[in-house]
Length: 206
Ligand SMILES: [Zn+2]
Image 1 (tube, rainbow, N blue to C red):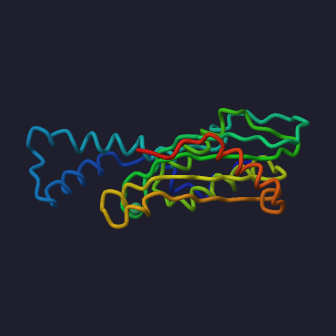
Image 2 (image 1 turned 180 degrees about the vertical axis):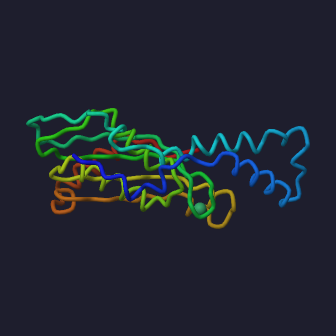
Image 3 (image 1 turned 90 degrees about the vertical axis):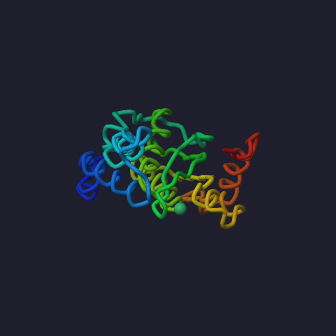
């Protein structure tokens, strides 16, 4: 597969850590804090370094994430990787949403190394995101990469922006899904996946 990163060029540049430091210091002042007090002295630096980690997905290069772990295999049963823990940041409030992703596909001559699926989830989670888009991006990426008979992604997450702001706490938990190919066309296939991921799953907690 050819990876075309051109569209993402503006996202792959390195983060401007110095600019983030200045802005965080200004933010501390703007909320009425004293950025020079002991506990906050190194906060701008810590936050800047934290963002480059939490938002590292912008700089992930798909070819490196996959790193050649694509294999030709004659296997056409469902492959399911469930309970992939992830941490993301909502783009509306820049607060975390955290949860689990479940990914399935039915191969069409190619399979992906097992450890790569969590890496793909991370690549899209470690950005400013909305859960619906993240779910779709994971499914689309696997679709483009493997051209499988079908792909399904279900993401369950708790949103701190809803929980902390005490708006409607029952809305803090959200489930989204993206179904392609056989998972969309065939009810039994979709149901097999949904049954599998609900079996023995623990309720989402923070
Ligand atoms: Zn939010």
